[in-house]
Image 1 (cartoon, rainbow, N blue to C red):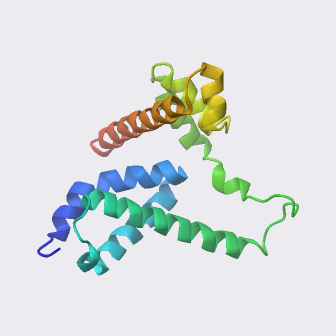
Image 2: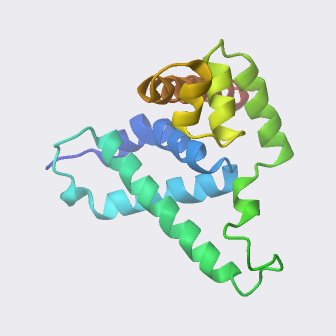
Length: 169
């Protein structure tokens, strides 16, 4: 694809990519690092964008791959530094939000209507599978997936509104 105005791409897609990355990791610091790296990689490789999908989808794919790469590097670096027993297969700290971030997430979650609130909570905090959530509600697994997806997007939309409100203060 030719003649891509990268400044315009950045201006129109930054918030969406940032919100997507934040949904992956829940850390502002890591989100900023991944988002910055995503746009850097996209700028370097803009000639590889074929135009078969929205550019925001392409950017989110780069963001996801960047996030995974950074997490792998951090995990590999931390292997020698871990003080936890070797039976721990995951870095617990990478999965825990700061108190402030968790508080804001719960505030946003509390504003959702049911069943979105409960499905999201069961999936994220209860770590239940979609099959288990479907069983609790006596619905299909597809229903659980769609409900979770919608809840997640509602929270991301609320997060963006909060971010833009705090940016204007």
